[in-house]
Length: 103
Length: 227
Image 1 (cartoon, chains in turn cyan, purple):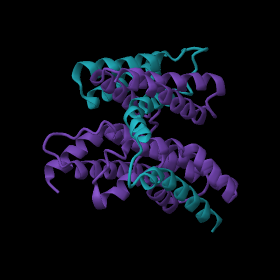
Image 2: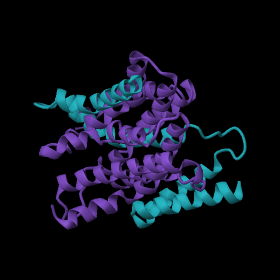
Image 3: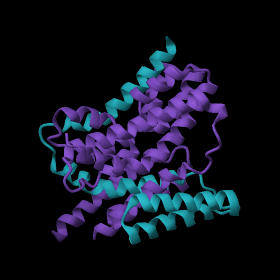
């Protein structure tokens, strides 16, 4: 019973955070919020990249090199093929080889 | 709903497939370790649907956390979703009956696939976004159930979770390539990096979001001055 309540609270708070902006600004979006809506996507994607790499250690071997090389691979393939399917595939493959066979 | 729309949504969702199955399996195994069965895994992935939230949630369940602790932790872990929703108000305008589900299913990964507002040629925008959201959640539930059921017998998938990082790096590169103003992207990455160094990997996300909001707000003056 207690576990069900904990799950329900997690679900409710998660949903609340997702729905709140849509409910608050459902009639009219103030210009400031519209501005944030415009500039936030690139900023959030930048934030998520850093967030994903937060546990990488750069002060001890392998100094975050597998992550760095794999991320550069993703960026390079993305610029070349312009397809996230290919860039993600290539980056993940490079990462798997690096962590399992090289470092 | 045309086949073409569903096919376009599936193709877009493929990069998330491997990552969500693998991360979902990780969650399922963790939950099994805390002695919660497959019903719990499926229910949590269906009702909460948030990667980091569910990982943290296993700890809350195992320790029998209070309602207050659970609510506060959920708020801290998922506060970034306020950001996603604010920036999707415009894109999801006019989504009709599919809109509540699309808002509910707006995870980091779904957000990064849909936030540019672009839709493949020939696909219905709302149907496309709805099915990308739905496919992604299916992968996530399947992963959680698999991990919970088969945990011990699955081969090691160490490293495959990097596909999620790769997804964000690809989205970052693509928006960099297609926009001229790189200040918002640099603001997001720079502020987060700064806060990571200052506050450490456990507590940096909330200060980072606050700092990003402040800097973007200050940059607004610049935009108006040059407009």
